[in-house]
Each structure stands twice: as structure tokens, then as C-alpha cells.
Image (cartoon, rainbow, N blue to C red):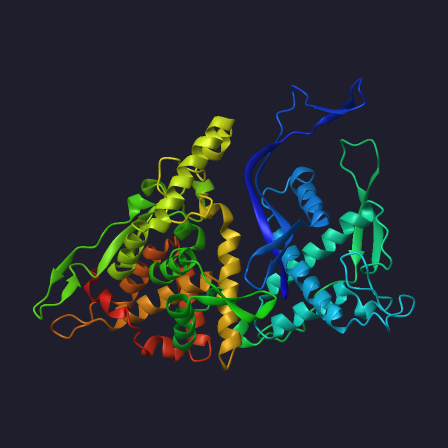
Length: 518
């Protein structure tokens, strides 16, 4: 039977860590106590890594925590005071997934009869490295990241964050005296002597700088920093019509994706993810904004009979309010969770409404209410306090199978989007591989809407919007405080290859914006 291993995450939100005092009682058993004065350390989000094995029927076979990575992540949160370790976890998730691929290749080539442990290289593990530096997992990973950037599949900033997470992970264990068979990279500690200020009795202060040779370096040119033009500012680049059509076919037609590490079998894509991605695409909402939608924001669009006797929506475009006023989240809840109103096609709203009437959603909602009651009974009231906390009185749209709000696991949306994107890249022959993230759906919405508004005409054939009015309207819908931010989307669209297609091709839904008023 074939088995598939992959790295998955477990998220724990909003808990208080208190350092225990361990003692031995009269029976020789360890006893755990806490200091009364210890109020603990608030950890808002902890993302742990696990190696999960499935059989060919997608049945769970084994689940094993990656303890070495998880101890490092805990140290970053508790000892170093890092409030959000999500970016570090993503880097280690990518690295350990890479290790699994190396192990699979090694296992496929392994021959017990010819293998000699004294001469042949060991099986790749996080702490077992080949003798040759260039063959070690860390250097192979660095070179692979660099190629992903060159190919436009990963942004420079993302790649540097990933390699930084890996370096800091190994530094953590090296400082604790962990013995590797061969070093993961060349490591040197440089001691600097810094002048102290007048309040110190010591003339100098020592600071140790840990340096390595595991760095990502990119050649620079005067114009593009060594990167192809189409890969610059990838976070703002809209999808071309052909790219979006391919992505939409996966989301709305096949609804099946290739999982990481298994390109031989398609797996079903849960409807919650297809709904989320489509909402981001057709409303311009950010990932976290769409994830926090609830029943109070969803309506059943009114249907009327037109002159041809067909059922149509009375209002093809509806308003959608988000933020504090509407009890949902925006990107920056710590700044007051600013509210705004955007637009949503009636068809998209109807799809959300129908989903919330489904038996699948009702079962999840019951589990959500049960989970909230259980957490309150346990005294975990911190989960329900603050601008970005859970409101147990709301019926959140996106819930996990166990009833937890999916905005607590935003990384899951990112992981699923990568699967959708990789499925398209694996299935179709495109001139350029699709490299955009969920955020690029927001850019696609902005560019399409701006293009349409510039072409919209009234009954007398006159343009309905000036460029300035159109730009301000799009900026307001996106929640940009400065119109220059919106301009960045449009400039990237004009500079990118095939950018003219975005302005000239009419997508299926775009006609519904005809009724927008300035």
C-alpha cells in the first residue's frame, strides 16, 4: 500500500504560558506548581509542525509532532517575546517539506544489499548531513529557494524569510550544544566591543554576532535588481484573464487539487476554501477580512422577473460592510478595526447565503456553539476579549469541521491556495507559471473594476466616471487611505507582460458593475 507523508500545522491561539516549578514529593513523583505572582506570558498564536501520513484512501495512518521545530518556536514566543511566529512556522514548514522530498528520493534509491554506512551518505534527516558541504540539506534548500525566486514562483522577501527561519532554527540547537554528525553550515561568532553611554560604569559593552555562509544572494542590475520584470512586486500583480480562468476552473468546476508531495492523485477541495477565494476575487477583501464574515453580513438577494420572463437579481451589485461597525475584522484590528463598505456581485452573495442554509454548515455551527460554551466553562475567556477576538454570539461563515472559526487558522487558506495554484501549473502549459498569492486576487479585483469604470458610459454615450473619480472609488472599496497605494496596483498591471489583456478582455461578471453610481 502506498503512503503519503506531508508536513501539516496545528494552531493554538490565545493562551497564557506560566513557567512551572517542578519538585519531587515524598513518593518520589514529580509535582508541578506555579508561583502565585506569575501572571504568565500571553501567546496570541502558536503554529506547531507535524509529520502526517495518509494511506492511498486519504485515511490518517500516523501523526507525529516535529519536536525539534516546535521547541524552537516555543522559545521564540516565550523567551524572545515574538508575538506572531506564523512567518517563522511557514519557513520551517517549507524546509521540512523539502526534507520529506529528499527522504522520499533517498528511499526510492535505497538498496539494502549495496548500501555501506561507512561510504554511502546517510538518509537525509534534520540533524544528519552528508560529508560534502554542497550536498547538505541546508545548502540544497538554499539553492532550490534561489531557483524558485528566479523562476518567479517565490518572492525574494519570502525566500529570505524562509532561509532566515532555517538558519535561526539551527542556531538555536547549536547554542544548546546539540551534536550534529556534520555542521549544517559554516558558523562563526564575532564579538563586537561597543562604547557604552555615560550611565554605565563600564567603558565597553560586548555583543556576540552569529554569522553563517547560508545566505541568499541575488545579482543586481540597475533596473530590476536581477529579477525578471514580470516578477517584480509580485504581491501587487493581478492575474491575467487566462490565469484566472484556469484558477477558476479548479475552484468552481473540478474542485480537486494536488497535495504537496503527491502529484499522482487529485484530492477534493473543501467548499469553504472555494467560497473564500471567490469572495476575495470578487470583493477585493483581504484574506483575514473574508475569513471573518458572519451571518449578519450575508443576505438573500431579491429576485425579480425581467421583460423576457427570466429570473434576475433586482440589484446585480450589493453592498458589503466589514470592520468594527459590522463586527468583522479588517487588516489592522489593533488600530481600531476600521470599517468600510465594499461591493459584492449578487450571484456571489447568493452562493454564500445558500451555503449557510446547507446541512454541512449547520453541523459546523452547532459544533462552534458547543466549542465556545466549553471554552467559557473552562475559564478561557481571553479567547473572547479584544478587537480581534472570537464573538460567541456571531454565526461565522467559515468554520472548521470541529467548529472553530477559520480566521484563527489563516495559514490554512494560504496552504490551500498554493495547492490550487500548483494544480494549475502542473496541469496546464502556461507561458509563465502562476506565482501569485491570495493577495493577488485583491489586485485583480481592483484592476478589473478600474478598467470597467473608465469605459462605462451613460445612456447618452458619455463616460460616467473621470479617472480621478474612478480611482477614488476603487481606493474606497479597497480601504486604502492613500490613493497612491491603489495606483501601485494599476502601474504594475500596465508594466506586466500581457497587461493590456486585463484592460481589454471582458470577464463574465464585469457587466454587473454598470449600475455603480459615483
